[in-house]
Image (cartoon, rainbow, N blue to C red):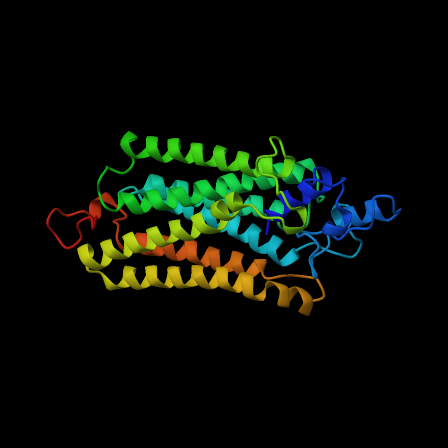
Length: 316
């Protein structure tokens, strides 16, 4: 996981109660060993893992390795898909929530671009650059799921989409969440205040990062799917978008489960060539595509299609 980059930096530079670097915990030779720097340059994502993908040789890592090439390719495709969906959404001039949905897809593209940088074994482990990229990734991930929740809230028609009443909370709270969670991630890696530092280096953990990167995305996704499914099923009474939403929820859950259950097996089975992160990236991209499809089923595309009181009137 990308947040391992933060713990790696912490143990490399500022392990609590230990002399830096904590080589044994990092799975590296002692700092006095001549091979320490070469091992550090080749280290992939993870800390003392039994199987990890070495850093790509073409960026200064281990010769002959391409890094996490499968995830790199899938993240690149995901960026393009996010941008394409954003362009398609903004063109749907009469669709409810088109501005907010466009922001959602743009955010998804940004998050996948950051994942390409910090989870594909391209940047040097323990470096300041990787720590910053990972911290920004965490901040943008948290903000992405806030946008997802806000999009669901808009379907309740409490506030009008595309207006300042919608965009000010969307951006205001999103920026606060992004900056706040990004700082927590950065402080974890750089130990700016020591508040977020693991007190036991041998059992590194962070309740803050666990909540931000695991609990919050799961909760936000659940909120989105429950609200949207409720609106579609009880208000619109449409089967096609409901089934699409259920498919999106299933694919998202499958992607997360597949990543945690299969990543190590894939890594060992391919001799550290790829891991399960590409599966999660693929299924997350399918999920975002299904979210777009469901949205198109319940919104109008052109103003000419809108007929007051008719069968083609705006659906919410």
